Each structure stands twice: as structure tokens, then as C-alpha cells.
Image 1 (cartoon, one colour):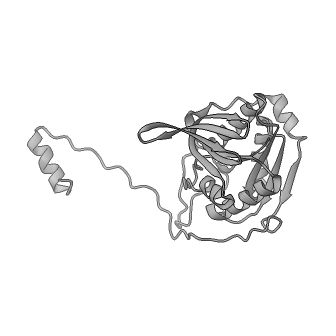
Image 2: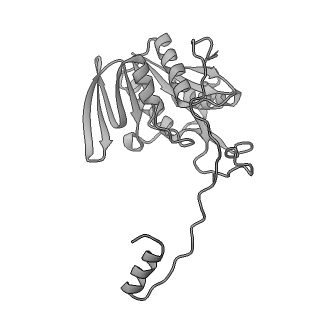
Image 3: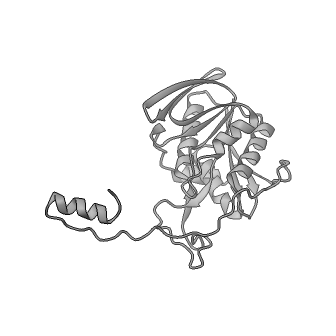
Length: 248
């Protein structure tokens, strides 16, 4: 069984995001980037399934410019067998990404597509679901436990009411949540081995995908500064203060 794992390069989660002075976006030049944390969890789960003998090959895939090769090397160090770099220097929106990933999965003949439930840069939480819709295959999102047996996967997922267990036929799309696993620490020998593993470079055109910009960002602004708290001595003062702010 072959698994395709999507890994996205994002601004590192430890970095404090700064908005550009003209409001055209956030500052990314000279800022540390890393693999999206949810995608790390997806890659770790694929490696664990391979170690259990449920998966025979793991293919990491990313979309973006030349710097994304670093993210793929990290995925290869985790345990991916090879990687696909869908190279494009422009902005890639979720629908375009989903079309490219769906085409890559179809081309590879993979039976399992794993990705993080969302990326921490845009928090769109759309790509995995759209890949499943484009391929007309089953999906199980927000997975906190994954078990693969034969041509089926049993996924425990987190919902508002608690936990829900789904059994889906393969091929399927599974998006991973934080509590699924804890990604392993990468050792130097694994990092060195990753440098020798193959990375295939393709374009949107090679996959038959035409990039489209369905959403236009008009302005980016930082969140408002939190105002200073107000101390009140009585309940009546509290009620009056809330009324003055239009909260009651």
C-alpha cells in the first residue's frame, strides 16, 4: 500500500508574526520556516503505519518555491521513501493545492492520503476535504487515532460532542489532529540519509492543473491591542461598566 503525505512549509510556530507596513501580508523574508506541525503529525503517523507493516511506501509531496525542498528533506528524514516537489513560486490557494494533490495521488496510485487538518499560516482547514471531493473518495478528518486493516481504515476523530469512530474504505483521505501522536526527534544519521533520497520536481502543467485565485486578500492587519483592565468594587459598578460598553 502506498501513502501520499502532504507537507507544507510555513512560518515556524515559535515566530511572532509581523504584518507588513503596507498591509499586503505578513513578513516572511528572513523569518524561520519549518514544516507545518499538523503535517509533521501526518508524516509521523505514516511512518508508524509503515513500521507496523500496513504501508509499503511513503511519498511526501509539497507545493511551493525552491525553498520548499528543505521541508521535503525533513519529511525524508522522518522516513518518507521519496518525495514530489510541485514547484511554483506564486501564491497557492487551497483549491489549487487540492487539485494538484489530487492529481499527484491519482498519478501515484496511492491508497491513502494523509495531511494535517489545517496549516498554521492560513488556518483554512479545506485542502484535505477538497482532495477527497475531487477524487470522490472517503474522508475522515481530525483523526486522533488511525488503524489500517486490509482495504479499510478505522479512524477515531474529535468532534464537539466527544469522540466519533468511522470505518472508511480505501482509498481515503485522513487529516490529522494534535493528539494523534508526538512526532519523533530526527537523528543526524536520518538527516544525512535523507540527502540521498530522490525528489521528483513537477509543475502544475505536468499534472494538468491550472492555478486559479478564487480568494483575494485585500488587506492584512494585526489584531487590536488589548485594552487595560478596569477594576470595580461592586456588582452595580460592573453592570454599569458592561452597559456602557454595550455588552448588556
